[in-house]
Length: 128
Image (tube, rainbow, N blue to C red):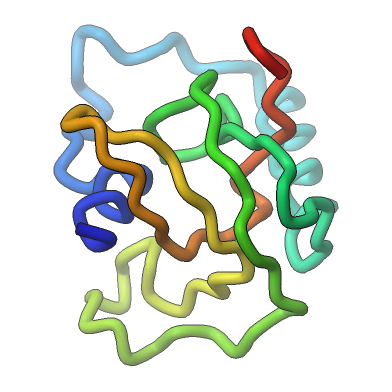
């Protein structure tokens, strides 16, 4: 079940084709550079603590942005994961899973999985 949550949160299986008619318009290079620098500033810096409510950042490749997830555990920067079976070109190859969280899935269950914290932001939606 945790694998299903991890795949759902990480958006595996989503079509990310740049030719898709529904693709968002390309932002200006300055905006892209600002987003990249923002991700760099968050990478490797644990900003969350157990009990915090978080949600995937809008510009991450995770699904569930705007939905609450609860932080269960955090680690200082762990070693990269190179033995996950993911191909080297995958975004999960070499990932540093530093935050364990739980969230509700469609079936109503609340499984947990490890994620990279830099792809999350504080949840500020309803009930926060």
